[in-house]
Amino acid sequence: MKKNIIILLLFSSLSLSSQNNQQDLTYVIYKFKNVMVDSTKFARFNPNLLEFEFIYENKRSLFKIIDKMESHSKQDYKITSIIYGGNLIHFRDNSIPEKLFNVNYKGQSLNVIMDLKDYEWQISNESKYIGKFKCYKATTVIKKEDKGRNTVKILNPIVWFTPDLPTSFGPFGLDGLPGLIIEGTIDGKAYFYADKVTLKDEKKIQIIKPNKAINIAEIDFDGMIATDFINSRDK
Image 1 (tube, rainbow, N blue to C red):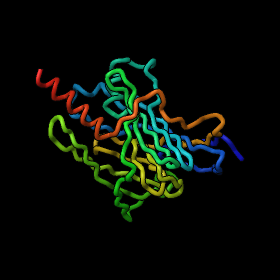
Image 2: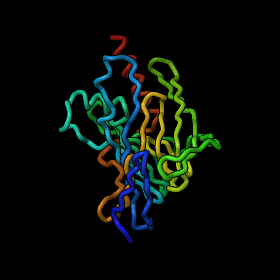
Image 3: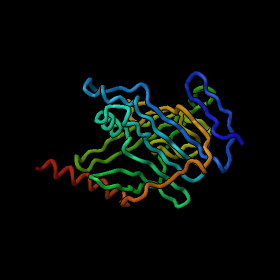
Image 4: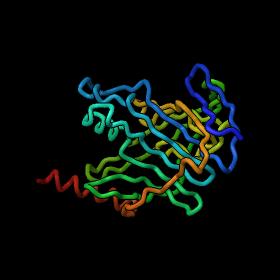
């Protein structure tokens, strides 16, 4: 069995020459491209500097930013990572089952327990090749309630996935599709793509749930944020 076989997903020449088994984990690097910013004052928060790692096997997955803070302006890099979800660690274990994201909030590490229900994806017949992979378009709707501002933000993710790499796990918590997401967008402004896929021996890399964290239900976490926002606004 070949180990550490690299699959470069570089739009022009993708190749797949690997063989998977239960001893292997799939390791994916995601990057951003074609990002639209609302104004010039946000131009310095360039997500092209960010890289995320996505690790999955049969029952578990982990998605988090690759910390490169030492290479860039620390303040700008930190703000950029927060804007584009780099402050969250997504973890899922279907054997329990459990789905959560970890976040540091007001100096505390919190494991925010999420609803296990997958998104209601609409898979179209529209397809295209990204390198050698035939990918299909899928869309869904995500509603995020902001209790502090009493508003609902609606996101319309659009992704392209390939059944050639079967998995129900996805980057940025986008689970529930019958294949790996190769590229996509959550908000129509920032587009991410899979830059590299590698098979890793599970003895060398592991999927570990964020520990030393306080468990909190997502509804309680949202309520806590809303309360803090209201209190800060009323001061």
